[in-house]
Image (cartoon, rainbow, N blue to C red; front, side, top):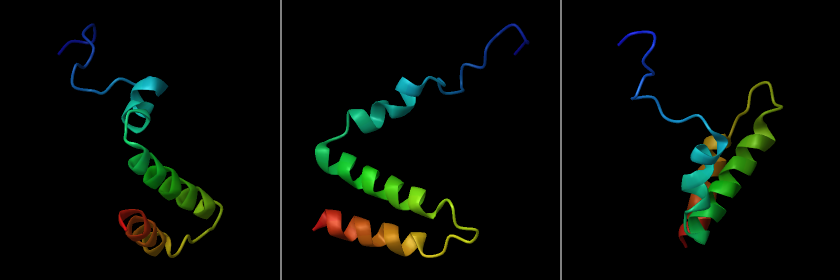
Length: 65
């Protein structure tokens, strides 16, 4: 591969292509993803974000029921 040729194996970087799988997902999957992202976002400000795995596990269990 030369510097003039773009790397064809790298994924597109546009925001639309990143969000497309979420936007096209069924409502149940969207709800699950949204809840997990919200839980992760709530922990971002913590120096040592503990318990996120337990939070995600609980969200998945609730959504699967």
